[in-house]
Length: 281
Image (tube, rainbow, N blue to C red; front, side, top):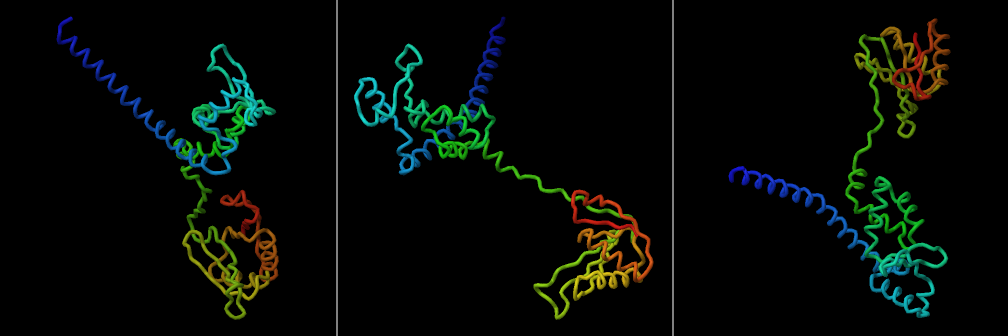
């Protein structure tokens, strides 16, 4: 192989290694920042009174270990005991008496919570905290919440906007193919004796008729509806969002004022709503 080919291969290897290092740095940097942020917030919480009895600093943790190894009878040592999990001296666990759960120093919280949190697919506080609480004695739900607040993936998941309810518009292709009847309640701001607004609209042309009403009784509504039908003609479908009882009363009253044929059918735009009613006239 010529010298030029060797140099070209070496350059490609160097470029590949540099790219790998850069990519690794891009991955490790957010993790390092997250670890530092969690440690900073945890130290702030550790300074508060509510966490002093549950969280052990590294020095306090080592002091308890040394007291138990030397069999010193102190009040703090009586709360814990040692468990050998291996031959090496480092493979000794500190556990709390009564619960038989592992006790960790504050420095080890991050790696323990991170491991379980990732295993659970970045679960929320209660799920992650419940798993941790089964094994560890001094990692509370508040500490788990601190970790989740620092987890970038969890924050990105929470920041995604949830899709709202998609409203399907009612589309028509001819005048009087579908009209809508509703009542607007103005009892808080009446105009003299008038406390309701009769709202009648054609869905194709968006033509709107508004009539003032003193009451929402079927007789008064039917009279105003009949006046509109005499002017504009009878729609194929009359839609109302005021419910079945309202439409039944209006239709019955309209029967008294004039003879109309009607047939009830479900609404395509409000099939999931029990307060919507359509009448084919």
